[in-house]
Length: 356
Image 1 (cartoon, rainbow, N blue to C red):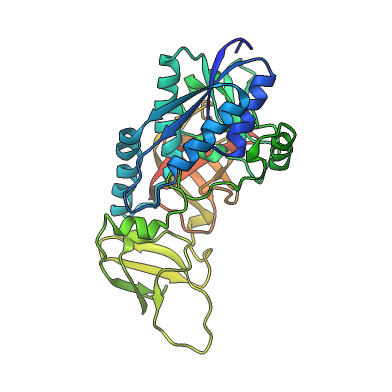
Image 2: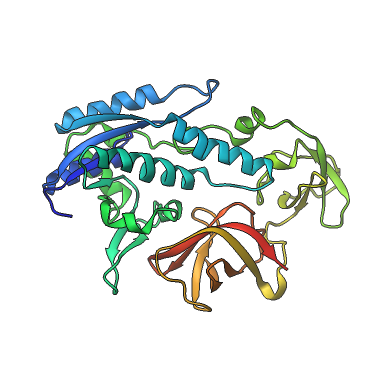
């Protein structure tokens, strides 16, 4: 983009977005800030007013125009309702992925375009670059501890030329140093945690407001009942807490949730989260909602993550909706799988089912 283009920066009130806006100003862009309000249930402590105030302070300190966008309905329908319906079906969705698609690179981009912007920028730790074919690509952030490319696999490829990630080439400590040097009060502000826009909300507590409890059995790998739980939809594969083990033995080792049976409302636990065996050490996974930044090449070996900052698993693409994962752990249905070729994001999809 031309340095004179108008860029709307998503200002959350934190250090990453404020430094993003600052850097773009330094580079000569015509920068304006936008704060997005989303839906939250009335029983969740209100934080958006404070975040909006901080976003306004940042825009004032940088001397840029402030915009406010109410995306309550978009978030409720496109993120929260979908998340609840997926959990009811026993799957494990990723609300942050949906939030990026529906809100930050959906509603916010539409608002920015309508107000004369040529592009948008966010404080995500990832990068874009021009590939060998001349097309824009999505790549990992330079800071491996903060890389957020996993959450961005649903972005429309056609939108990449209109997106800037000003801090994607930096490490977190560098971002805070820039904020301090620029005199931004966010230099020492604590990073936000939890669900996108909802904050530090306990997922089980959230779901209990929308899904009734239904006590069921916890069984071990031999099928023996060893405990009880509150309802299969409240649990995620790999979890170690939340269910109650009533079996009393002399050697109590931690149990990991390795399987869920929605029909019978049971969960299976094992002493290791790597207790699941897939044929020949690999699982064939069927994907839905796939989004490819780079045309998938059949049988080419890539790596993939099925959890944020999860282990990189050897992966082969069989077709547009089918991949293999070399692993010995439980694979959560409904979760995002993101496929990489080195630093390049090849694409991703939602795990629909496993093929035996």
